[in-house]
Length: 160
Image (cartoon, rainbow, N blue to C red; front, side, top):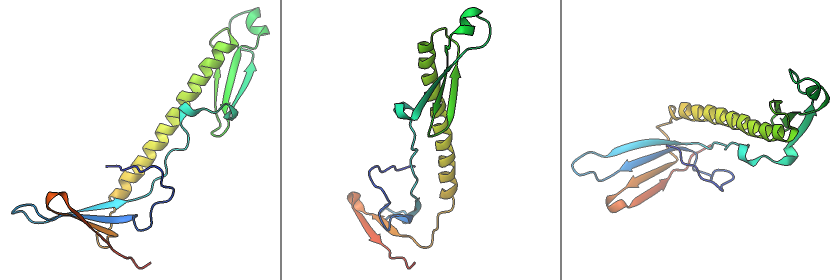
C-alpha cells in the first residue's frame, strides 16, 4: 500500500522508520501486530502534459525520400528537442511543416510519458525491495487500535 502525502516538503521528524500497528481487542483471539516501514520517496518531476514552450526547441530541415522537387526545396521535416531531458523527435511524414510540428509535439509527449513511466516503475520496484527489510526491533511509533475505532499513539524516542 502506498500512502502519498502532498504538500509536505521534508517528512516530519520522527515519522520515517518502522511503525507498529497493534490490534488490541479481537474477541477471543490474541493480539495482532503489523510492522510498517515508512520511507520518503520523491515524486516524478516531469509530466508530459505540462510541456513548457521554453523547454522545447524546434528545428526545420528538408525531408528525405521520394517526393521529387517539392521535397528537395521545402523544409517540411521538424525536429523537436526537449532541453531538460535531451529527448529529440524527428517527424517528416506530412507535406506540411505545421502538421509535422503538431505530430512531433504529440510524439515528444508520448516519449516523455514513457520515460516517466519507466522511472516510476523503477522507483516502485525499489520501494517494494526496501519494504522487505522492515526493522522489527526499534519502532518509531506504535499505533494501538482499541474498541470502537479508538487509536492510541505512542512515540518512541530513538538515540542517534
